[in-house]
Amino acid sequence: MNPLLGLLGLAARAGALVAGTEAVRAEVRGGKVQCVLLASDAAAGQRSKLIPLLDARGVRHYTGFSRAELGRATGRAPTSAIGIKDAGFAQRAQELAASTSLSQH
Image 1: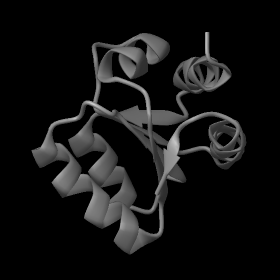
Image 2 (image 1 turned 180 degrees about the vertical axis):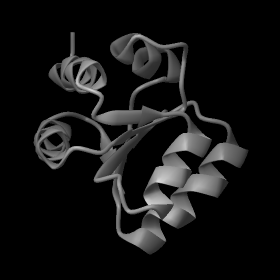
Image 3 (image 1 turned 45 degrees about the vertical axis):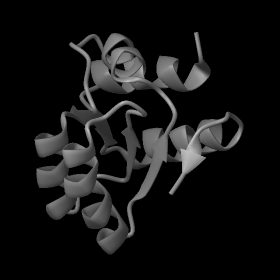
Image 4 (image 1 turned 90 degrees about the vertical axis):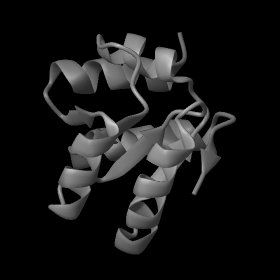
């Protein structure tokens, strides 16, 4: 398993993330999300709602895993977006993302 996906599983069990495009958008607006993983196969409509908000708020976001991979890693159904709320988990996720083939935005 990819180390970043393993970290997402830990963060999910710790209650340190939020899943789903609308939930992530709400938490980003509230200033509670440190970084976001966006599924590579997320629908264009979901991307167009989320990416401008992330850019406007200066929230780093990464693309590279599928909806199924993100869902499986967090123990959920396939999901298009995962927001990491905890600063420690977010920092480690960004380090791991930098060492993989994920696209950073």
